[in-house]
Length: 311
Figure (cartoon, rainbow, N blue to C red):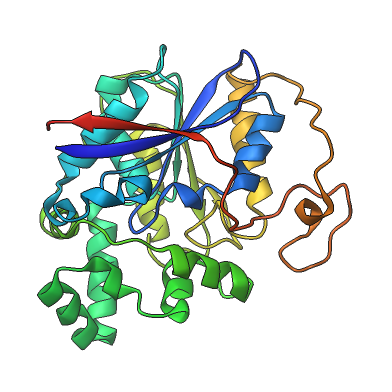
């Protein structure tokens, strides 16, 4: 029995819905309040989900160790099943892989893949870190606890951020990293191929990070080629595009692309000015007109819905 959760956000009336799917070691928290507020301002509903054993589904972690990739992919289908038609899907890293695994079944109006991982990229990253820290690598597998592969904020920066990301952003992410399914990591290491290109005419946008040390550039470009598009890169960003300073450019590119597809309104909503605390930037310098910063405070209470699956 698998448990997933959806955070039901306040949202503007009408318009499209985006469902955000997180990646390895992350949870719905990686889609920060500021990130979701940006889309709300554009008149787009946002929903964030937790994969089995993550976030509010943490009570399922006792059996989470052997949850499979197919279980995760089915969880994404379950998350999207509550909407008709299917929402726009935005996946980061492993989330992007899961969306691709079920793309034919989901048939969304559009898909955005952020720093999409592939088994080859995961193997490359695992081998790279094994050569540098063989003891840590063996400890992870002996205890079957992938979270141990990120033992410090410095390791978190190396995997998920650029060298210039402010320390408090890195430390905030490190403090929230979650345990991962050991079986999923084994499958990524051992399965030669997971995604096959479906014969669907679904618009796909692929965005990569120029400072990504988890997914090599050629992997992101290969994913884009499989859908007949060209990957776009943010050269100064690390793997966690939605948490890096400058995340607004990533969000803006997604919205502008959706507008090109006529899936988002041409004009955004007028949102009342936030309290002064919302106008603080990651470096402490911001004018009142600056868009909202990445923050790690817990968002306001939302109605949390558990979705159960026997698969």
